[in-house]
Image 1 (spheres, rainbow, N blue to C red):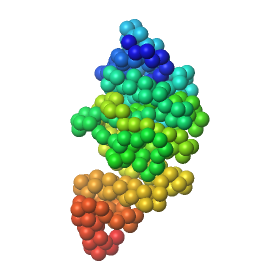
Image 2 (cartoon, rainbow, N blue to C red):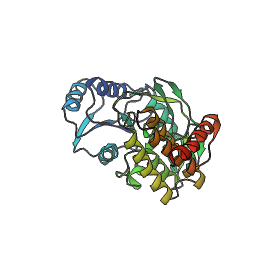
Image 3 (cartoon, rainbow, N blue to C red):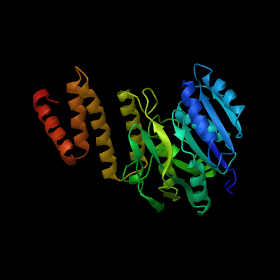
Image 4 (cartoon, helix red, strand yellow):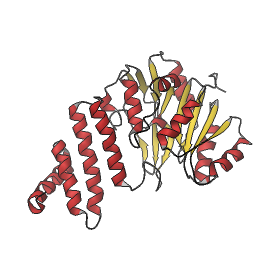
Length: 305
C-alpha cells in the first residue's frame, strides 16, 4: 500500500448515461492503487434515476465514500463547479462518465504533485483513445506558453488528464459556465496566466471511450462550431493566445465545419464558404490544406462567394 495520504477527490459528472458506462467509470475509480478520499457523482438533471441506482449499488461494496449530488441541468461546466463546491481535499481530478481510469492514475499524479512546490497548479498525463491507441503530449516542467494548450505537440486541454490543487481552481472561480466547448482549455489557460507552473507528461491515466452521443464526441457539428467560436472570441478579448495562434485556431474551426458540410447532400456551397473563411484567417499548411485552399478559392469564382 502506498504511503501517500488519501487526499484526492474524483468528480464524475453524468447526464442520461447508461448503467454500464457509469458503473465502469465508478469501478475504475474505486479500484485505484491509491484510492481517492471521496468520489462525487454529479447528476446534471438526468431524465432517469440511473445515477442513483448505480451509486447505491456501488456504495455497498466500496471502501471509498461515494456521494451523489443532484442538480438541475446546466451543462458540464455547471456540473463540475457544483462538484468543486463539495470538494474537501487538497487535490481534485475529473472523469467523464463514459471513460475509465487506469489503476495507477491517482497514485502516479499525486506522488508527483506532492513532490513539487506550491507554485504548481497541477500535473498532467495523457490517455488511451478507444479506438485509436495512446495519445501523446510533450514533456514539460515549469511555466508554459498558452499557445501550446490543447495541441498534440503541446499539453492536454481536457481536465481528466490533470490532477489539480483544488485551491487554485477555487481561486479562479472554477469553470466558465458560459462556455459549452473548450471550457477545459479556458480553465487551464487562466491558471497558466496566473503564472502558475505545470508538470507532465506522466503517461496514460485513463481510457477515453469514443461513443456516439457524448457531449464532445457527437455529430452536432454546427453546435460545436458555434461553441468553439465562443471560446475563441473570449480568448481573443483576453489575449489567451498570440495573434497567429488565434488565427490558426479559427481557421481550424472553419475547416472542421466545412469538412462535415461537404459530406452532406445540398450543403456543398455552404461548406466551401466556411472553407474560404478559414483560409481568410490563415494561410494553408500542408498538402491537404493547399488542395482544399485551391478548391475553396476556385469556388469563389463559380459561386461568387
